[in-house]
Amino acid sequence: MTMDINGTGITYELWGDPKHPETLVFLNGVMASYSSWGEYAAELSRLPCRILLHDFRGQLLSPTDDGPWEFSRHARDLEELMDRLDIPSAHLIGTSYGGEAAMDFAASRPERTKSITVIDSASEIDEHLRCSVESWITAVRTARGSEFFSLVMPFLYSGGFIAEHREMLNSRAHAMESLPESYYLGQEYLYRTFLTLDLTDSLKHIQCPALVICGEEDILKPPKFSSLISRSIPQSEYVLLPECGHAAFIEKPREIMSMLFGFLAKQGLHPEAT
Image 1 (tube, rainbow, N blue to C red):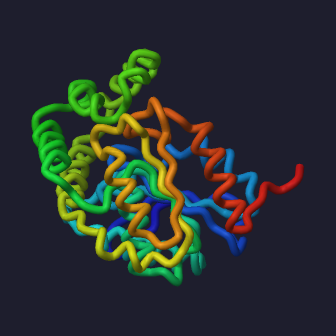
Image 2 (cartoon, helix red, strand yellow):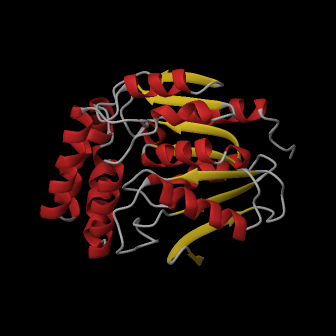
């Protein structure tokens, strides 16, 4: 479904009882669409809750031509979407760019955030990360389809995962051949939005429990960024995943889902008996 939110069409799905008082909100990585959370949403639907998925403005299913933005724009969009769907507060689960959007929302709207899970994210930028993202901007301007995917893939996955899942990754690269030109324009806007990232000082305002997860072999946003996030949020837990790169939610789904069930159980969400 698509809803007009703050002047752009935001595409979303709402799973479960639309009147349930508990809601999980999944927030995508920059290259992804909300379908990337399908396995997680299916598994976590065992919890007594509804589940909200959506594409940020500029992502595949919510295209826009008015970027780049600031992270606060995504927070306003999410708040408006929650208002329209009668969701007063939620548990936020975000990976990479989605984790950064989740932190911005939680810091600026603590009354609307019950918990936050941040996977392979950063709260600020150093020169190595800036150069990496600038190289993505160059790539998205000059390459399309599988060529573009090949340029960014080494930043996303650990060497072991690439070696073991080459067929799956080749299939994903091939799938990018069919993406519309608007996808690549949105990607450039989102990368430029990321370069405005400056959240560290605001993390102390996050009042809810936080789970911070990072792949040990993440070369794009290495563990030092997640460690800083965890130290800066008052109620946080930090988990480092061995033999895992930046796309931890793809490389280690069973481990992360197990962590999510345990973390959300502490917030009062337990799987319903079947």
